[in-house]
Structure formats: structure tokens, C-alpha cells
Image 1 (tube, rainbow, N blue to C red):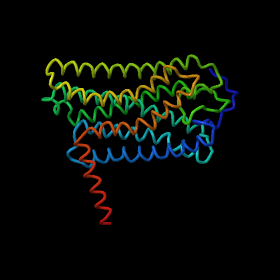
Image 2 (cartoon, rainbow, N blue to C red; image 1 turned 135 degrees about the vertical axis):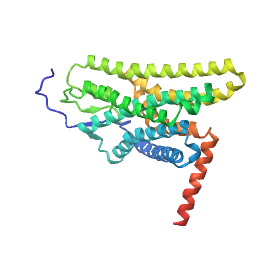
Image 3 (spheres, rainbow, N blue to C red; image 1 turned 45 degrees about the horizontal axis):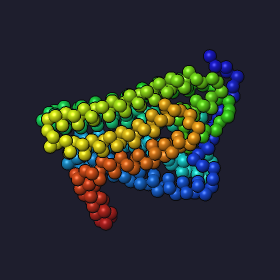
Image 4 (cartoon, rainbow, N blue to C red; image 1 turned 90 degrees about the vertical axis):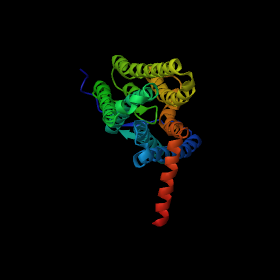
Length: 312
């Protein structure tokens, strides 16, 4: 039982990425340009998958949802950071911080499961092509997507259940530009070693385990293709390298932050930038620039939008 004579902290203060005004001005421009690119790139992927009939297949269905989650993840943190740097008002309410953590872990957990679903899709497409449409049916795709969101929700609730009742009486400074569990726990007014261990076990071990599961599954796919047909190995390797790149970009920062929760150097801030501003740009680029069908569909959609603009 925590003592009840603590005064609850009404808000937290973000220390941000840097205290230097010139660096903040550079980061403000840099972040704004990146977020606009993230928004336009991912929304274009989502709209293309939705409105282009030729892309109504399991692979593009999952890709569209990945872009949606990436856009949501970035929107959860980056606009707030841009606003803080512009206004100099670097605060967030206690409830706002908890909500940000909750949504962050729902999206992160969902994306983990979605990446597993995408690995399953590639396994079936490469190793069992004749049964692809039967196994990856619309019903299966909906089940995979629903399962991803449910697991993300359960993961987030389980995480917050351990920390939401911690006492906070000050200090109220968070050395980052967004709220997440390691920094949230750090400012609690009580001994938090056991809570830190549980959070690390939940997020860190799950991230690490899922990462290695995905890497092993891709190696298994390549081994299967190599055994059956050496001619298809190059094509399979090209396809899977894109997926492996996305997996490394997503899980790398997660594993580092949760397996080494309180680094003494600002590496965690760099990884946060990678997670929220770089990866959401690279994901659509990795999947679309290498995909002829996606590129053509995007061009058709852009042409249609431009035509409608001229008519109106």
C-alpha cells in the first residue's frame, strides 16, 4: 500500500530534445518537414490500398494497416513536440501523460502482432502459393487484424495496471518529449525496482522474443525456398529483406529502451526520433518504392485527385 498523504502532481514538464534555442529551431523545422512527409506518405498508402481494387489482397490489406498505425504513432507524439518547441510550453497533464502511454502501448503491441501477421502472409505466399488465397482469406485477414488490436489493448492495460496508482509528488520533469513507462516510473515518489522489473519483463522480453521469432521465421522461409528451388531464392530474399528492415527499425529502439531503461547518455532520445519520425517514413518507402503495383496504383490515385481538383 502506498501512502496517501502525497500531493498528486497535476502535470509533467518535458525537458525535450535540447535546451539550446538554435538546436530547438533546427529541430522544429526538421520535425515539421518530417511529420508532413510522414502524414502524406502514410495517408497516400492507406488511400491507395482502400480505393485501388487491384490492391485488395491480404498483403496490401496488412500494409495499409501498418501505415495507419505508423501514422497514428507519429501523430501521438510529434505534433505535441512541435507545438512545445514553438510555444515553449513543454507541459502535459497527468491524465494526458497516462493517455499517451496507454495509446502508445496499444499501437506498439498491435504493430508487433501485425508484423507477425505480415510474416505469416509472406510464408504462405512464398512456401504455399497454391493455397495462398484459401489460407489468407478475407476472414483470416480480419481475424489477424482484430487479434492485433485486442492483444495491443491487453498489453497496454496490463502495463498501466502496474503503474497508474504510483504516487507522484515531485519532481515532475520528464527527460524526453513524450510520456512512456520508463520515465513515468522514474519520477514516482516510491521505490520502484519491482515495478521496473515487471515493466521490463512485459515490454522488453516480449519485444525481444517477438523480434527473434520474426527473424527465425524469415530464415525458415529462405531455407524452405532454397531447398525447393534455388531459382526463387533471389526473389524471396529481395522480398524478405524489406520485411526484415522494417522489423529491425521497429524492434531495435523498443528492445534498447526496455532492456536498458535508463541510459546515462541521450541515446534514448535518438531512438525515439528513429521510432516516431524516421521509421514511419521508411516503412511506406521500403514497401512502395520496391513494389511496381503499388507505385502504379499511387500514380493513378494522384492523377485522379489532380483531375478532380482541376474540375472543381
